[in-house]
Length: 138
Image 1 (cartoon, helix red, strand yellow):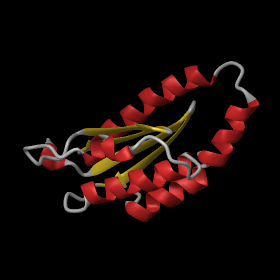
Image 2 (cartoon, rainbow, N blue to C red):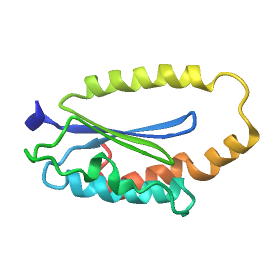
Image 3 (cartoon, rainbow, N blue to C red):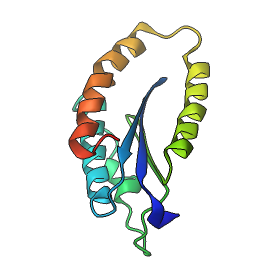
């Protein structure tokens, strides 16, 4: 399946806020674009402050076999997940699983500061703009 990737699901998480983007997979440019996106998106989500060294995360790990993995995780100021797949239907099912978790996490009282931070550091339009700079939205 590794050579059959056609799409990548990119999930940006910040507190209980999740944004999902389905992008076209390009084997030649995937790793480079994933690394660039990781740096830029984490810079935005951290408010430009020095945060966790994202270069220690999965997108920057060099695997001995050189194969592109099914999934990469970034844990910093909020998480980023890159999930590769050959079929849109499969990636849609992954979105549904995350959406069910988000629904549970979103229930109950949320501090005003958390909601303000989400608006400031995880605005959908800004995240979309960053994703679109590095990948072709499918």
